[in-house]
Image 1 (cartoon, one colour):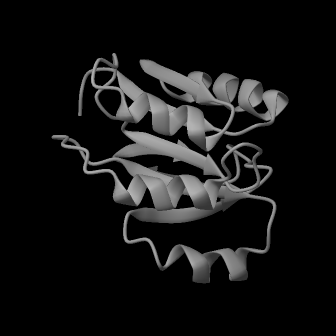
Image 2 (cartoon, helix red, strand yellow):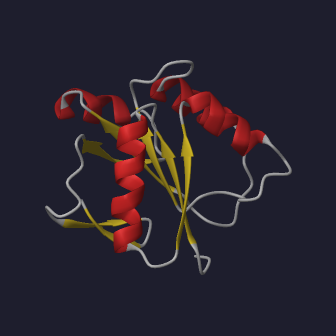
Length: 135
């Protein structure tokens, strides 16, 4: 992992993005958080050959978003053949039922897990992409 941890926060809710960025920065001393309002913005960034960040350490992807929702983003991401030296930990984040989402998430081998909103960063600690983050 690079010296700086990079996190993609893909969610249409500006208040949620702001709160999560603040919480993550409080826990991680050297973090670069790149927010996206929808899956299309994130996908276009990843498909851009001249992007600043090759690939993030962690992606938190909301499911219910306008323009391109989380499922559409995940399907397109699965089609991209991104060449990267680091493995990204991708977590689906949503208000939806955990049981239903866990079943759907199984169809994507690159999804590491599911986090239900609102994420309580003080509830317990988990390993996300080699990062110890309380969720």
